[in-house]
Each structure stands twice: as C-alpha cells, then as structure tokens.
Image (cartoon, rainbow, N blue to C red):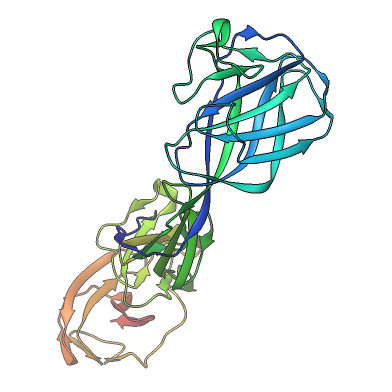
Length: 362
C-alpha cells in the first residue's frame, strides 16, 4: 500500500570532463579470407578521443603470427603510420576475436577515418560487400579486385572525451527509495547517485530525499485498539473480512465490538501503510478504566449523567455486548447526556482518547 509522490527533475549541465567508450565495427562478414596476409581495415570514429584497442575476428583457432600493428590517418595503408606497435605471437580460440590493446594513445577525431593493418596467419572472415559504411578492407597493402568493396569482422574501441551531466531533484518516497543506479535508501537526506548518460559519460545526480516512514505499531487495552502514529490519517480494517474498511472507524483509536483480528491503515504525505493484524479476544467490556481523560458523574446513574471532557470529541456509548447505542459530539467542559438508557452496564468512550470508562445505569 505505497504510493510515492511524483519526482521533480531539474537538470543542470556542467563542464567537467569524464571518460566513456565509443565502439565501432562490423559483424557481418560471411566470407572466408586466405591465411598469411596483411589485413587492413579503415573505420570511422563516432566520437573524439583516443583508440583503446583493435579486435579482429578469427574463424580459425591457433596461434597468430607475430607482427606489427600499424595505424594510419585516413583510409589508406600506403602513407606513414601514425602508430606502430609490435604484436607477439598470440593464441586465439576459434570463432573469437584477436584483441590488441594499444600501448600508447592514438588520437581519434569524430568522423575522420583511421585505418589499422596487421599480418594475419589465421583465417578471418570478410564480407564480400560493404556492410560497414565507415570504411573498407585492405589486402596485402591494396584495396583492389575482390577486396575493393569488402569489410572484415572487427571492433575498435575509442575512449571518448565527453562532458558529464549533473542533475538534481527532490523526491518523497514511502518507507524506502530506489535510486536510478539501483541503490536503496531508507532515510531522509541529501544523496549523490551516478549512472551513465546518453554519451556513456557520468550522469551525476543529487537527490534531496524525504522518506516517509509511517509508524504502524498498535496498543491494545481490552477491546480498545490505539495507533501510536499521530498527526496522520487512520482507517481501521477487519482482517477477518478481507481487510474491509470498518465504516466510521477513522480515528486514532478503535473500540472493537466483537472478537476478531483488526488492523489500521495509516496515511500521510501520499503514503499508506497497514499495521499487523491484532487479535482482540474479549467480547465484553474491558475491565480497565481511566478517569484522567474525562470524568463521568454520577456513576451509577439513574437518569441523565454528565461527561466533563478536556477537549471537544465524539462520544461513543456501547452496551455490554459491544453494540453502539449512542454517538454524539461533546464540547470541552461539562456535557449532559440524557439518553433514556435501560438499566445495565455501558462503556463510555471519547474518540481520540486512548481509554474508556464503565457507566452503570440503574
């Protein structure tokens, strides 16, 4: 029974730098390439940053020959490389990628081509067409004939320079709050949460959180149930009747009229919590009397009697079987009640007080 309040979001952009990954590549390469060739592939970075690693997919398992990774500016393998790196002989499992992590950063400019080239002794797939629109394949230093419009299966990771975003919002939650990152908070406070933004950089979120933690504990005194929570809404329910609301039972205290299991739903700030069901065993009047909240005289009474209340309240009068026989408002101070009651024992209760008193009518 929880209903959190809506969240108010205010986004503020700041200019601190963070790091994220952009991944470019091609996975559509059904053809097979001969072994023992210099394989090159041009690619188009989609963000600015530095090249982190190159991956080449291998159909064949085994050990790829030692060689040199070269990276060129533009879509070519005939210019002077901007990066060279010795690559040792590397064992590769069939149908996996051979990955080469760059030892020094290679700058990448968004949407400006780069090309990598590496000797491959293992069989690799190629497309026989251009499924990757950002580049093309090079075979033994050329881009001619069969390989003129092909791509290999590859990935290139670029660590991007990008701007993080910061945002803040205020939230009210019932009992606990689930943050965007999945953290759960159970108390009010000012929190910071971090998740990836749409660029893959940090989205830093400040959350001013109010957690509404409702007290659902109860006190039982005879047939009188009292909720410990104050300043909230109340609705008493009958646990033995499908948790149906008891008509008119919407005060802090509830005087049960029959044995059974009862609970209260307390509400505040858009949140509602149900207490545990409490068993009320007695079907008669409670033996405990408390005269400190209101006075009753004369008692016993042979007719009208006076109730002196500390504050305005609603009078509820019950017979010995727990049946309601009278309900009327009481003002602060003395109130005369002339209800023409038949002789017997009654229970007098003022709504909002924790206790009741016996009244004997002669």
